[in-house]
Amino acid sequence: MSVCEHRLSTVRQAPVRHKPRVTVAQLFLHAVQQWWQRRKAIQELQRLDDRLLKDIGLTRNDIPRMVEELSKPSRRRKTESPATVSSPADRPLQEAA
Image (cartoon, rainbow, N blue to C red; front, side, top):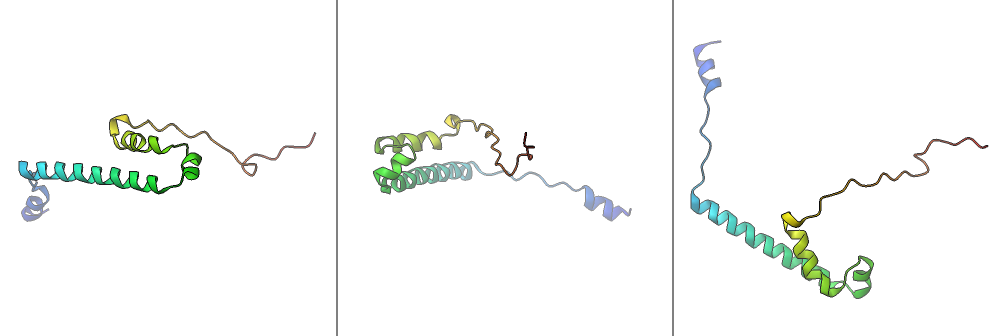
């Protein structure tokens, strides 16, 4: 390996550091985006008729609370592993007795 190749392969770049203003701006933008998404979700659910809301297990009074619960990462329910559901096609053939 030549000296030039060795130097080029071992050069490390310093990590990019953001200015504090950029970080604050990014946090603000993230908060605004979260607020916007929650607002749009509430609007879309409010557009559904009562029958559809009942089908998914909600009432109109539940919509804002449910959207808030789902949007907070600390309050998100841990996803449970889905129960394994097998269709008849997946089961081995049973011999007739």
